[in-house]
Each structure stands twice: as C-alpha cells, then as structure tokens.
Image 1 (spheres, rainbow, N blue to C red):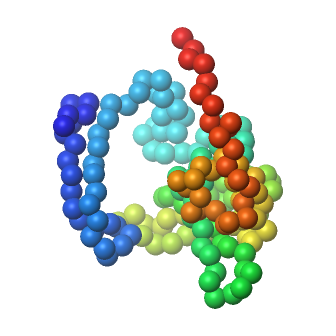
Image 2: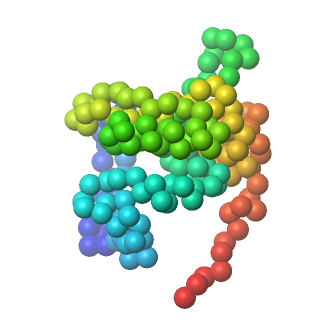
Image 3: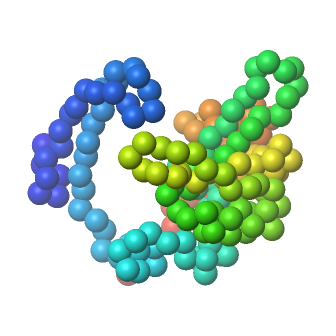
Length: 173
C-alpha cells in the first residue's frame, strides 16, 4: 500500500525493549500542515526543545495524553497494598531541561524528580520518576481522561473514564 509517497512495509523483528519476536508495521504518512507551528516550537533550530510557554498551558487532559503516550506504571506485587510507581519517559533531553520539567510537574502537585538511564545508541535518556504521593495525585487527576484501551497504565482505583471529554469539536475554517 502507498502512504504519502512511501510504502507501508510489514516487518517481523525483535522489539527494541524485548527479546520476543513480534510482527510490526511501519507506516509513513504525510505531515499535516496544520501542525507546522508546533514543529517550529519544538524544533526551532532542528533540535528538539521543550517550549516552556506551551508547557505552562498544559492542563490535566494534556498531562493525561502525555502520560498515555510516554508514561508507565509499575505495580508492586510483592507488597500487599503497596502504591504503584509511575514515570514519564522524556527522551534524550538535557539534564537541566529534565530538571525544569520535574520542577514544573512538582509545582503542579505531581511530586517527581528527573532521573536518567543509559540506552545503547541513544546515550543518557531522561525519565521523570514520580514519588508515591505524586503518582497517586497524577492518577487521580488524569483517570477520567484515560479510555479503556489505556487503563492498563492506571491503578484500578483511578477515577473512571468519562467519554464526555472526547466530544468532537466543531470544525473551524
């Protein structure tokens, strides 16, 4: 099949985070011109940055979308009643940017710190690690925005999904 001038190829290979073979699909699409302004905010000189003027405007819904994309949860099965750990992958941002994002999230009530891991081929990779209280606050704030297909990233006690938050907006021309 042809997508935006590039082919859609099916591949079977190892997932970079797992040694299990899984079928994968690679799909290329044309970028939507509407989002050019966002690209210019995040990549002003070709290298990704965090536009803090946009970050300061993010609400709980935006944080939920970010968490559904880059977030993770770890349930502690060894300790009955233990609260889960949670984090957000930040990628290869600098430590100072990661610390600034952690400071922003903590000020929003989601206590966290920026940590790092070493990823082969990427170098130092930043992660926000939420404190147990920060993770609980995060889950309580975003639960209503997380649909069934993404509930595996939440503890069972998180607020139930409320589809009214996904009502389509009127098209603007």
